[in-house]
Image (cartoon, rainbow, N blue to C red):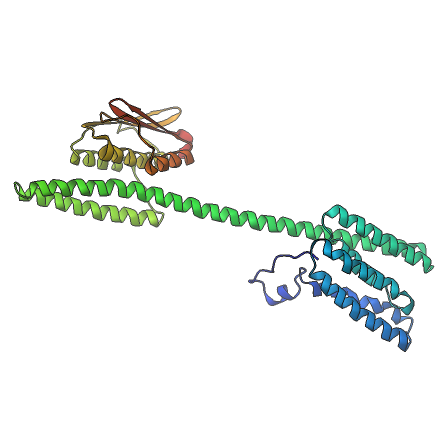
Length: 367
């Protein structure tokens, strides 16, 4: 018989005992073999032979329970032959024939199993006719075997679908874990990139000021420490899944970071009312874009523009830096993935003098 999934470990004891996937559960039908002895007492020889035959059947049945694929044919055929051999000894041999049909039903593919079962039912019908049984008994035996086979095949199909569903659920769980890891990685990259850049800028400025203006150097170092503490808090919130980046707050932080880097900042449309869902996505995009301006653009001026129309919201960050060709790094890839997840898009347009980054989110993302 085909191997089935192990029963869940969280089942209660009676669920485990009576689990239909366990072969011994179906042995509850076996005592019906002696039903004919209720009205016809067997002699000693018939009884001994019948008991010996039942032990042979149990060995074949347990062997069949461990078979898979086409290996199930042999024990199924032997069980049917055993049933026919037991006819002269007065027991209800059709019980063993039912077990043979049940084993044959597990032959893959299903069409081969149906053919083998049909052959078994035909043999059983011929044997009952040769015994001289009434037509309704013959029909009842054939119908009962067909019903048992149908139930068994339906159970096999249900088990296969259940296994496929469990596999799909496991794949979904793994994909969800991978997506969460990627989200945390993107958020940490965006958070730490600007924070560490700001700390580095303030530290360099403090070094240059320490000889000429110690008070200004101390102020820069205090601000660097505050930036480090703020970054640590944001990292903790991101790891905990509670990060709620606000666009207005990010605009102010970007203005301060650009000022520290000596880049003039011009902001247009900062009073535009943007839904929180869209604002969170655009805030992370703004953080990454400003970080790239500070670290790579060598710009002296940066313009941040927010626009809103019927199609959604757009954030444009442009600078007058070195521009030209560049390789898209993990920051821009993370920004693109985050916008794509929100139904938005990212466009990076480098020019001869500067780069323009446009992040757009549809109005439906707020839902």
